[in-house]
Length: 439
View 1 (cartoon, rainbow, N blue to C red):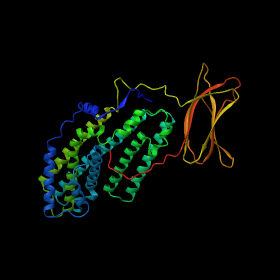
View 2: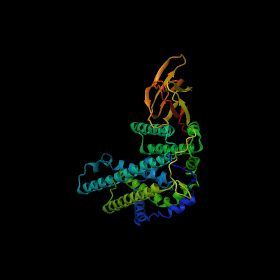
View 3: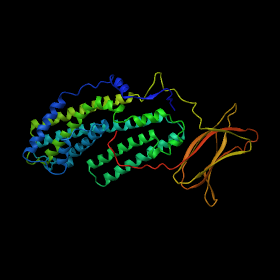
């Protein structure tokens, strides 16, 4: 576990000085120019054929509103619009006459749209990779300051279980034929749930109310950090002020590109795009995907090097002395040491971490776990095995009494000095409160 001694969470003022060293080179001047030309093209497509109810009207309504304020919500919006465009540019979703071009003009148009599909698919994969890596990096950084024993593993297990449930929810939506728009509404809701859980870890409420009670050794500075990091006027607001504006321009541009393709498909038989309009669309896609991927590379570097804590001294030393929650006992030769835990609820976690204090001779000790139900019937949970040290945990399937046994009965001469900690952690139940607009 990395030390947080002498550290405090980053502040907005500190991030401002940090971001001064990471100035984003301005977007290409082609962004506003091409966005304006695409906007004019959409107006022309709508001049003789108004927007139809449904997707066309929904996209136009979204375009009439400003982009979201949050950086990560804009990332999700760009991803949603790119996926919608990739869907439109899949050949089976082209207008029928374009799927089987009967003229050189249509054949050339088909070639152009195939290339645009490839450009957007590449940019989409880059964004997906960025989001996955950034999420993992943030979690791993937080876990660096969590005690590296069974308690840290429990938080990892909780996250893995939560992520599996989230993915199952998305998979079910895909199987049922839900729209991309509906799927991304759920993906953003899930992202806000991750933020809420992080804040709950910091304030020891909600899903972590019980768990944090057992996290002896979790630095308060870490809890303060995860609680404060996304406050409306907290450190991340500086990030929004610095890097939000170029991202907002990209979000608007990709929405315009999506709208022009959507309108073109709906009017293809009566109003095909001419060569000049296709050239504008091609250039817009090239500029957008190039600039968006440049922004992703830049912000990846900013995030990768961004500090979480600040100190007057160099931080990061390994903290090996925070072991107040360990117990130490001597197990005489020929004897055992037992710890009994009464478990009231299934899906509780029983966890242990132990080692022997070694001298000149490496020693070991037998260890096993047994269960006794309400009728007094015993069963073996963890078979007997000899260890010098071990960490482990399991999820209980039944309520009752669980006994952890350290066995030195086989030894005729050597006593064993045992250092251990054991916890019974009640079930961690993830609740899903109503989503609020927070970051």
